[in-house]
Length: 319
Image (spheres, rainbow, N blue to C red):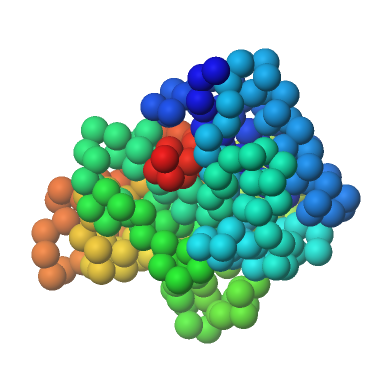
């Protein structure tokens, strides 16, 4: 029977899984609802059941499972420490041991943004440059990230290195869920940007956005705002502000790492050229100690698959 590796991307509402051969070529993928209210043991049992079914269907035996989780994890022990978006927050759950026992394979658990960083390095923009230094920013409901230095993912103690969304951008800015003030996440996450759009729409300052979403605040996202940015000047200004904050964060990373590339993923990256061009401009404006012409700013190639492909990359690196 052929050996295979598996990837699991654990999210607050859904779980994405995939099987790949040991070279990292995808064999199949599937998803199931998280149903986190049923508890960690139930969630892990259903993941194991699904992977067992997929393994049987594809006539493979699992050798290594990589898993990305949305929060803090002890990567050495495979124990989740704090997953804020899941019921019970999965404190001290021995994920690697439980899944390893159920599936009889090695299990490697990392933060989902760090997994996505590795996925981008191995299967995205970094695949043609295996020794690249890369900074990855996940710009979605929250803002996460990761860094790879000369082709190696930097994890640090507890796998927490690379929390790029929790740089202080405005010292007296909004309070962040982490306890700090003015983190990038409070200024340029998807919800933060959408809130700015909703305020403008509700005050009558974004008529084209109002027309596009028929006045429904729940329909306002970065994508809709980008669609009307040329017609609603204040929406355009709000997107520029958010992109500037992201650019400042990226410039900080460039100053520290001097990476080959800064890759932007998540829903906010769907803003398109406006975001990429503004981030490039801010890096050039704010990094003065050395030339930054060679630093590429790129939209992630992996899109919504970044998490599960990153989990596959995590498994592959553990072989």
